[in-house]
Structure formats: C-alpha cells, structure tokens
Length: 145
Image 1 (cartoon, rainbow, N blue to C red):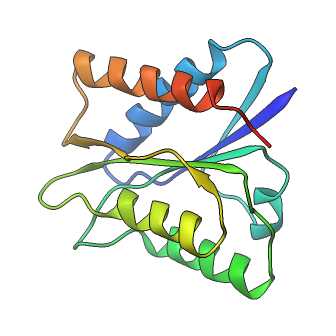
Image 2 (image 1 turned 90 degrees about the vertical axis):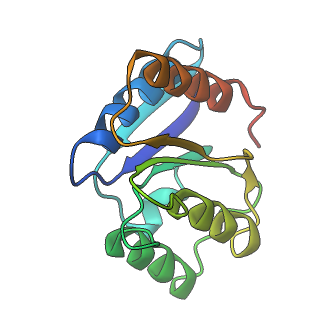
C-alpha cells in the first residue's frame, strides 16, 4: 500500500480546512494510506512514498517549523529522492510559501514534485474545498517510486 504524509501548519485554521479536504481526496483513491500530521521528524519523511506540505504564507515566507524541518532533514542527509512531493496553502497577500516548499523538495531533495502548488486566498469556500479534494486525488493517483 502506498503511504502519503500530509504535514501541515495552520495558524488561522484556513490551511487546516484545506488539509482536511486534501486528505479526503487522497483517501478516495484505492490502495493509499493517508496520514495527517501537524508535526513530523525529518526521519519520518523517508517512511512515506509521498509528502504533501500544507503551509500558509506569513510575511512572504513559510512557517519557521517547516523551514526547520527541511533544514534538519538536510543536515541529517534524509533521502527523499524520487518520492512524490506537493504543497498547498492559504494566503492573504503574497502566497509564495508553498512554492518555496516545492523548490526545496525539487532542488534540495530531488523529489518528483507536482507543479504547481494549490493556493487559496483566505478561507476556502466550497469551490476551494473541491479543488483541495481534486489536489489530494491527483497526489494519490501519481505513480510513486
């Protein structure tokens, strides 16, 4: 069974709502085990076939916890090469945090990323939640190494 980790941070709850819908979409695909976490160690990342990061944009950047996670994974030489990587998040003004996550996944870890990140301004409405479900299905249907 393919394993997907959906790791997220949400301060206002908007990215949390997106996370629930992404997980729902991924779980709709047969043969996929989806785990949703607010925290993971760098070593845990290697246990999954796909890593999906939900991260909002604050002050043109990702949350410090996500940044530290990737820095620690680099220091510990965690191997994520060819694993599927994806990112999503809510934003108010700029929205670049999920793209920053994808760049790290692709350029530092050699992951097979899903372009482009899913971005939703402020809180997701019903249409936005459906986009999140579709995004989760897309990740789950991606051929995994």
